[in-house]
Image 1 (spheres, rainbow, N blue to C red):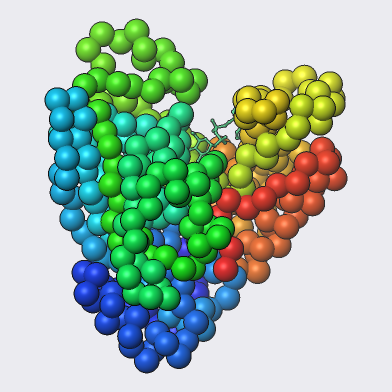
Image 2: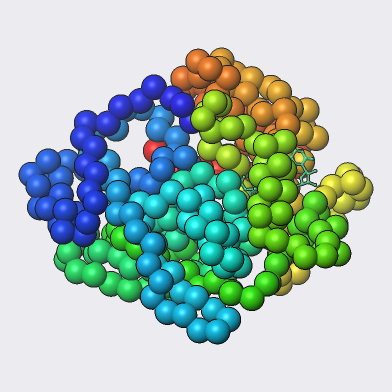
Length: 321
Ligand code: EPU
């Protein structure tokens, strides 16, 4: 978010042995702590009076391979988009729709990142962790991770309990594209479609809608897209016939928060240095000098405006600390 905030300690480690040393250090034991990935989905509302841990475990190994599938194990500290590039360079199918998502491999398994019709849980086989309480290694299968939309067991029952050290992903060695998302649909008829072609298209869509993290602070989507029940949706659609929507299973409907925010007149609205990003209203951007208080005031204003207008409660997708 490009906010000027500090932590008391930052511990980075490159191996699980070094992680064990960190977990035994007095600075760790005597302070509160939190594990971070690339930090790209975090909003610190003030300085962090404790220790942040960050993995620099960086490797990509092939752990299993058949005629049409490959399983790769990637260290939690690998930059997510470097993993995507690795898959594309080796002609492995499955990660390409998630090109350009900021962050790291470890967080992909916690947050169940996703974009353009694919989620990390579609390719995750299992997740290797260290239990902070016992120091022991544990492996969670995909079903054990209880994946849902931007959600997993690591954000709920096991919040702050396990540290992800590596993630195994299974990818296809034979062409298999997911072209369900609007701008990708027309690619289905492209002869000889390549992984690079899909990646370039996705990066172009991202560039047109989302701020470049190197230049403009943001956390990508600040809110989750709300999922409402059918009756509430019928009433919403009666009042706003153009509202975009997607089926969310069990008769429920997902409505884009970006549309709700824009249609509530908040496009470009700002408080201090924090603004509703005009090209994608689901994003709060730091226009250069935002303080944590500006970001907090703006996101709360968005929640109350949307709630008053539609009776729908938005929930942050970002981790607000
Ligand atoms: N829309 C508006 N105004 C806006 C923004 C969106 O009317 O300001 C409308 C669009 O026209 C479209 C619909 O809302 O009809 C959906 O917009 P878009 O396709 O841009 O996707 P999104 O629902 O806003 C989600 C993810 C993104 C992901 C994209 C593409 C969430 C919270 N966000 O956004 O993820 O890149 O789909 O798959 O699920 C992120 O998690 O940080 C993130 C960027």
